[in-house]
Image 1 (cartoon, rainbow, N blue to C red):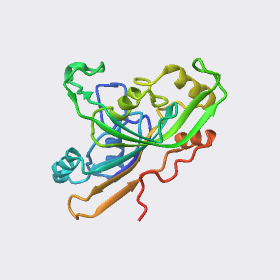
Image 2: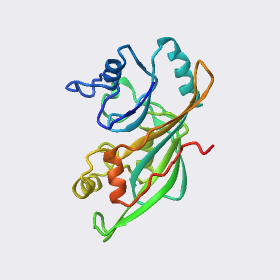
Image 3: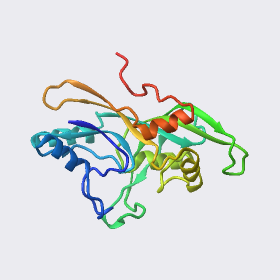
Length: 233
C-alpha cells in the first residue's frame, strides 16, 4: 500500500514529539481496517510517496530491497541559490546514534551519494543577503544511498539548503518564504518510487503529485515540477 503523505505528519509515534496525536500508520490502519507496516520513513516535514506492507511476512524482503539500494527514489525540492544543471554530491555523513537524541550525529561517517538535477530557477528582487536580488531553484534529487536526513544534509553541504528546513536550512530565507509566499513547510517532496514487488516480481512506478501547499509556491515562483523521475515508457 502506498500513500501520498502530507507534510507535518509523522510516520509513527516517536519521542521527537510526545504531543503528536495522529500518525500515518494509525490513519491508514483505520482507513483499511487492518494493521499496516511502514517499509521505510519520510521525515515529518517531507511529503510524498510512503510505502507500507499489509502483510507482515513481506517486511524482511522489502527491508533487504531498500538496504540493497535497488529501489529508486526521486524527490523535488526548492533550494537557495542556483546549483549546476547536474551535480553529484559524494560526501560521507556521520551516523546518528541513540545517544545523539535530537542533537548532531556523532557516529562513524558512512558513504553517501546524491544526484541533483536543476529543473528551474528564479531570481527575486528582494535583498536577503548582501546582494540586491535573491536566487532560488527547483531541483530533482535522486539519493544513491539512504542515510538519515541525507538530502537535507547534502544540500546544506553544497551550500544550497532546502527552503523551510529549520534544522539544516537558513532562517532568513525560510522567513522570506513564510512572509512572501505563506509557505510554512519544508519544500521537499518524495515524487516517485520504483521497486520490484516482493511477491509478484512486477516493477512498480509509484508517483505522488506535489500537494497544494507545495504546488502553490511553485506557481508563485513560475516553476513547473514537470514529470521528474516518472517513467517515460
